Length: 93
Ligand code: SF4
Figure 1 (cartoon, rainbow, N blue to C red):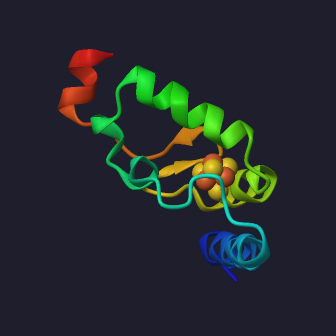
Figure 2: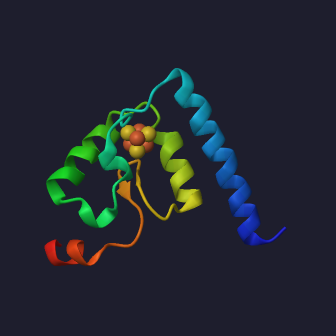
Figure 3: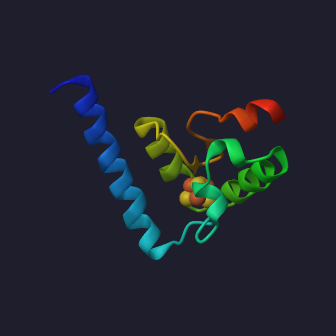
């Protein structure tokens, strides 16, 4: 098993755990489109709001564990925006 396939399998297991936990315990970000927006479209006040939402989420640990393993190409996971910043973000940063 290669290092990448091992990480993929580990990430899949962690995503499964997060998904199963979410059945009985909805995530605090449920229905909030900002959490799936492109990183470059999120301004600092919005990121602060999202960080606060995550800090109160019962799935924070599972979500962060998954994201640290999977290194998603996009989205906001457990207080961290993943993905490459767009040019618009670079101008506002
Ligand atoms: S920790 Fe944040 S991104 Fe993860 S499920 Fe909870 S609210 Fe959503």
